[in-house]
Length: 401
Image (cartoon, rainbow, N blue to C red; front, side):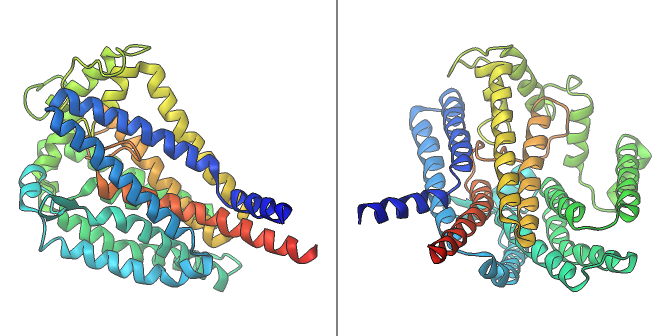
């Protein structure tokens, strides 16, 4: 009996990817410590406790979500993908009517529900739903067309665009360009691994680069901006570009946040000023600019450790994907990896002045419930792969003994 109990415990342990849990836990601890520092220097003691406890509660809720999602195998995820995508779209367009007026006045984006003191951004939980739906679409197409041809590949591109377009429209109406870029990154990543020939992929990404370069040229000229205004670009988006290109030209208005973030990161030097030793004020550093806290308190070494944890997490995800050998899971994994990578790249990039400000949070570290839940759902999808693959392998081995 003891031997069977030990084997059952070993089986349970093997079904859980402790490497992923370790990475997320370390990032969560860094996030809680950074939020504590930001809240301590920006507000009173009551707010410090509230900020840390609130974030901790969201981690607990996200952990429960992971446990629930892990119970779904690939067949069940396949079945619920259209339903979750539909619910996500419904919320994405509902927020255009029931958006938080206060957040709209502060950010210019109709992206948040507000119920009392609770706020919720539907686009964050739409990300894993979109990943599931895109993975199903690509896997279904490749099953129907096992041999890739120009015709079938263009059909697949059309399907990806078709399922991405409603999301892009919803985000465009919300004036949330930064989040729209995340969905484009997810779609682009899934497209890259979908098997589409490089004779199509290379020109397509070349065209995207040309369009991006043209947009950058337009946004930096007066005449170009008038053209962009006619297609829906807002004044605050132009201001963010100006801040990015010339951070030191206006350090009292639009450029203040970026300038202060760069000062904070620079003041950290190699080893940082020490935990909870902050001398540079950075607006909204508990969420969008959380990397400035890490850079100031823990310096270049601390920033490198953070980035290493993200790459270790990505490595663990890739390893799970190769182990399971399930194409549907592979596309899900690609979507989750692209979501996390883009968030990390954009958030750290904008904190040090390499990229324009977009309001994209740092995964598992920045304060914010809806973003955290969306990322933890993505982790749950990855852990579901290992959980059910190991369960299947254990059952099969038992049948041979």
